[in-house]
Length: 296
Image (cartoon, rainbow, N blue to C red; front, top):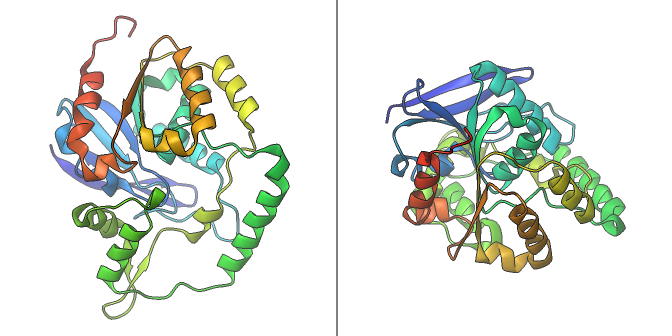
């Protein structure tokens, strides 16, 4: 597939895009997880059908995209606005949405807000935006504000490139291993030159204090029952994530079971399956992409 790099203008800068395939084909909007970038899919996309146009974004404050304006919180609502601006730019009536982790969470909520945009939805190890229990909501907000102040008052130091690659490998979710090729694919988009032989991460440090809409679990379940995903929906999750967030994940899975066009797949690989062993999920995703839906 032909690969292109370009940027989509937004109010505060640009959103970097890495596209795969022929733009005349059905567009698949692809979103990475938090602190990752479009390089997350460098190993998976070549295993998917060539009859689609894959639009992989660096979300703002990630990779080669412009950071959100300084001295503010980063919220999930900021990313929803970003998605609307990007879709407006491409001027397509329908898209397939595909997201991993945080990217899938954003696309799931976006599909509830704008269902008319969505042909199909694919989420990979991605449950709904994690809830904040009411009893800990105020302490969480205090913690986020303290983090923002500390980050704003500090400066990032330079780092050697290979040390940056090692840091990417050492800071994966759940402490999972990430092979060197996958880490390099991410590093190529999130390490920028900073002086002689030194680099800095372009990943915004405020992401560690990003804020989701203030939902608790009961509100989320009501949202999923009231605003059902009505398009074909492939929900892939790992046993690893389900075991770590057992109560929450069980509630989400039960809600998705009530969506008649939702196909649920459990896999035994790690959260970074698309990076480390993409061949295990590529057939599942490919079959779903190519599936003809009688209601489309």
